[in-house]
Image (cartoon, one colour):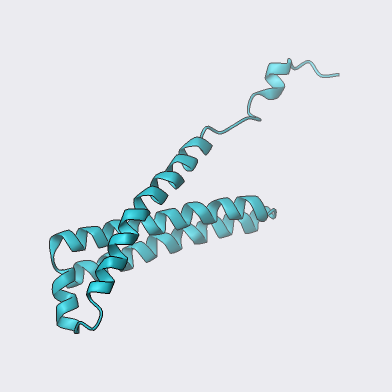
Length: 123
């Protein structure tokens, strides 16, 4: 026999209130990636056959550099959010799940930093 009320039993078992934010961020980054990816593909098509100096000059234009950085940041954040859900759904060993979550977050941060640094170094 338990002396806890039904409300007392239910408190702490529900949502952590982070799921809706995660869901929205996944959708927002997906919508942001559509025009960014189209712009990137169009830009690459226009640079076909260009030499290195032309590509560097293209990247060094402020608008192009900003768009590339937005693409990189949105892409890595979107990928991290998606992999987080996959790990949460399919990895059921506690220590492995936490380790993979940390690894994915660090990989996304390091990847975004490396790409951003590469863009800035050309700029």
